[in-house]
Length: 175
Length: 175
Image (cartoon, each protein chain N blue to C red):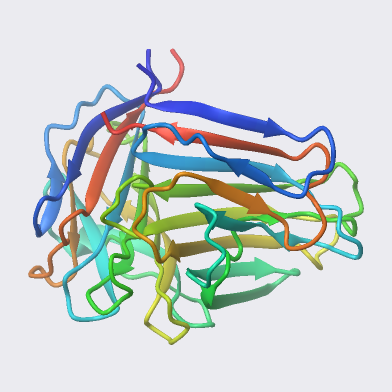
C-alpha cells in the first residue's frame, strides 16, 4: 500500500484562469506541487492565490520570508486577506526565457481535521535570467475555518496560468 | 518495496508534554517527521526542539536557523537542536502550526547526523512576535545510528494541546 499517492495532475494545454481540485480523497495530509507561469502583461514573478471551500471572505492570513532581487531579504505578514497570499511563485512574461516556469511545493497537514483551522506551508522559487524578479520564498498560512477541506482553488492575481503549467495534488497517509 | 512507510502516527486526545518514538528500525534510508501542533503556553508562539537517542545535552547539538517573526529575518548558530515555532494559546483559536523535519541517512554510523527543519506559526496578526516562520539545519555531534526521536516544547512544562498530531515516516531509496 502506497503511503503517498497522486490524486490528480492538471497539465494546462491552454492558458487557464484557475485550477480547482474538488476531489481530495481520504488522506492525512495533502501536498501540491506546481511548475507554473502566468501570462499577465508586464509581469515578472507573481504569487499564486489560494482559496479553500469557495470561501471568498477575509479569513486567510499569511507570513512570508524571502530572498529576492539579488541580495535582498525580507519578511511580510498579511492578516485577514481574501486568499492565501503567496501560495507559491510563478514566473511571467518578463522572464527572458519562455521556458522558465517557477516551482512551488505546498504542504497542507491534517486538511480533513474538523477540530483545526487549515494551516499550510509553502516553499517556492523563481530564479530568472536576471536578478530582479527572482525569489526564494518560504511562507505559512492559516484559513480561519475548522471545516474539512473539500476544494482548493489556485489562481494568479491577474491574467491566467500559462499553457504548460503543471499542478499536481498528492495525498499522504498516516497508516 | 514501498518508498514511504509510516513508523508512528499520533493524534493527541488530550494535552501532552512531548512526542517520542523509540526503537526506530534502522532499515530505512531517511526519516521524515511531520507535525501539526499548538502549545498551551500563554503566548502567541512557542518553540519546539528535539532530542536524538535520548541525548539531553544541548552542547551536543548545533543549529543554524533563519527566522522571521517580524519584517526583518534573523539568523543564528546556537548550541541546541531546532524544531521551530508553533502557535500558542494567545494565537488565533484552533490554529496549529506545521513542522517538518528531515533526517537523512539517520542510520549511518560513519557521519554526524544532520537534520533539516521547517516550521510555520501562522496567525491573523502582523505584530512582531505574534507569528513566526523559520528553517534550520541541526547537527547532532554523534555518529550513532538514530534509534529514538523525541519532540517537545521549550521550558519542559509546556504542553502540546489536544488534536496536535505527529507522524514519523521512514523513507526508502532504490535498491
